[in-house]
Length: 103
Image 1 (cartoon, rainbow, N blue to C red):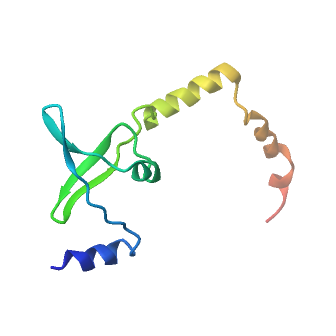
Image 2 (image 1 turned 135 degrees about the horizontal axis):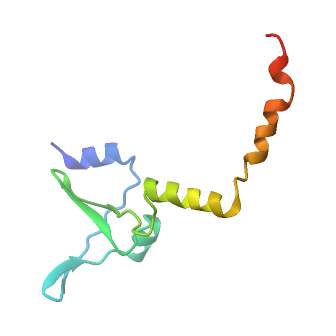
Image 3 (image 1 turned 45 degrees about the vertical axis):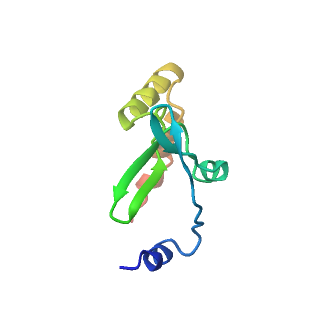
């Protein structure tokens, strides 16, 4: 299989190829990513590395500071308890008389 054609087909010809040097980092080895790539792909301190038959893929790691669905629901409930329900006045639409119309 010609990976060049696969790459062009899957990435709409916008991928830029660049040769990166593997460097010594302590007792390990690593690759330095160009700053433009880090900015463009919103890479933080961590990335997810996936090994595929086509090669290695890097993608941004989820934000460690982001709330889970459960934590988000708990934070919203605490906010409602502290400041009241900002949508409570919307209950008044139930008495706008439209429910009595014959349909």
